[in-house]
Image 1 (cartoon, rainbow, N blue to C red):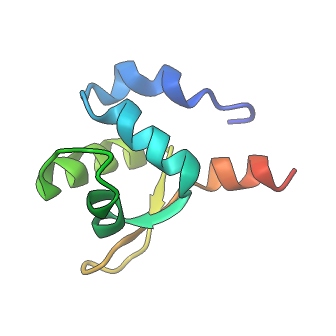
Image 2: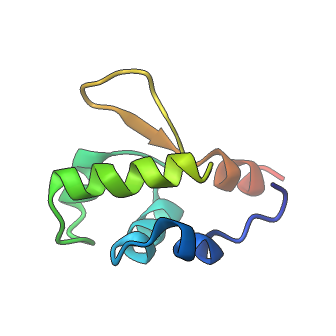
Length: 84
């Protein structure tokens, strides 16, 4: 999806935290949920963050590592835009 407009995905994600998470991702395109929680950007539970991130994966905005513990999330679309 060339020229992906991230914020336009808000209707698909349907979360109050989507834009806040997206703002964090623009600063940290590779991250863990712990880093997201520690950033103090969002006052949401760990489970809520995982739920939103899962929706973002389903919308193909993020990819995650295969590990269960300390899962790493990567925004390849953002990284590829930066590298162009």
